[in-house]
Image (cartoon, rainbow, N blue to C red):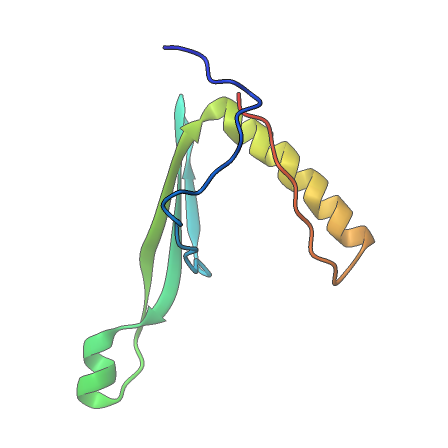
Length: 99
């Protein structure tokens, strides 16, 4: 396997859509780590057939990355959270390393 350059520019030629994932999530750790995100929403049939709201958690995204990238993500999130706590109400953004 060839190593990837750390200074490659970030591009989005396919215009990947943002996906709303405000629900439970799961992390499966291993050599390749999988993060599964869900979004809680009303089931369609009971809502339309009976006007009843019955919720379910729908898998919306799965991200598979290396364990090293998970460690880098953890460190980045810790940094962002500390930064956000010192400036409430301000958006934060940062980029993590590729391992």
